[in-house]
Image (cartoon, rainbow, N blue to C red; front, side, top):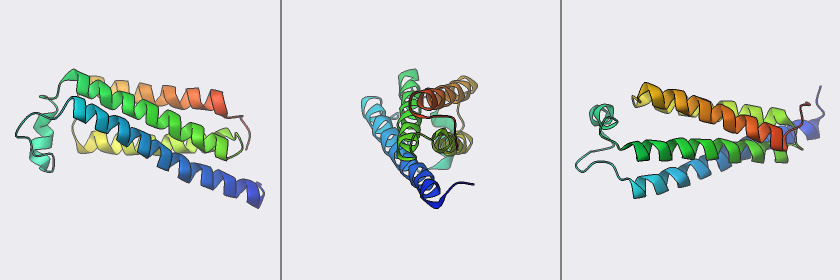
Length: 139
């Protein structure tokens, strides 16, 4: 059983890791959307238009989103591991939660199969890198 201080650092690491991951993902996605804006006349708040817009979005914009998710998981999981005293569990929990957010996004807005596969691979790889770089496999 973890002592209270260790548990608090673990929880704080996960919370701040998710926060950092969301900020990094948002900034990189925002830059991608600035460089590769959605097609003219598309209302991104209309669910019906979102279902068809993915076929019209350039591949570079999709790759920018993949990069954003990769960097977001990397930054968030690394932050979580470091705050939790290099406990890999914090980064793993953070990676899993960010992965769930990405999965929710991919089910809410239909994405091509290649993108879903690439997103899963990118997220898992960035989680692995953060785990190896900043986590020790201990509780």
